[in-house]
Length: 377
Image (cartoon, rainbow, N blue to C red; front, top):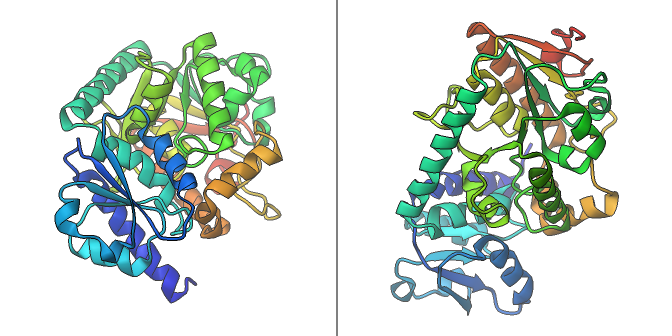
């Protein structure tokens, strides 16, 4: 059970997320650092998300409660050491605020940076142009792969190493995340699509995320796959892969129902995992008559983190994420996250099957919805 303070922070995190899409864009930044705090880590963190943005950033040493809001004007306030009470007061006053405090709560900091770049700093017309490009590219992708018999969805669990042992399966092949770090798996599976969505591991400023993006760029140059990711990560993707014609941003929405993304409604329900956020919706959008899942082993009761992975960077590189984003891990109930994931996946598979698409798991899994659909290829 969350303590009162954590309950308060969680409530604030939901309000901060709701605020994300309210900005008109094209705004300057007032970056606030508390007195006595070394500003250099904060500068580096903000620079990671704003590099290349045509925006004016003013730095000031102050507490949020001491700011003169007449001088702040229409600028978005970025804070690196806010108290929950200060954030609550600013939200109540409808002030735009991005919390880049890595200790604040859970995913607040890791999602704030991309939201800042996409919703606040990018002008509304520029954002509309980027979204239009994503719609056109999605339309082209769906035309290219329309109506294939099978879509093969490959996670990065330990069993990925045995997926498609005889070579690439016939149909649309969708992989994800750190498959980019495994040349052998890339060669054997030969994915048409690589999905990635994690704000810390893929879009953040850690050594791990830097390595992921370097590998992603290499794979794009070698294989030219489609890339599918949350739309608000677009500014960062464009920085690393400017003008890449196979990058497709999809909006994540807090919604009650699932959605099949298409150019007229290019969004998916926010589910918290790349499989349910992007991979299965992409497979269904391509109108495959069946979806085959690989490499989604589930979580062993002995695991002390999310779950085990086949393609992963070394322990020191992984530790860099924990050091940069401590609240992302410290406020995580891994078992609760996993159980929520399995419930969401079960509901999504039922939704897919109701649409007439058969779903099977080619490998054994600890995830109940996949275990009961085990059918080796």
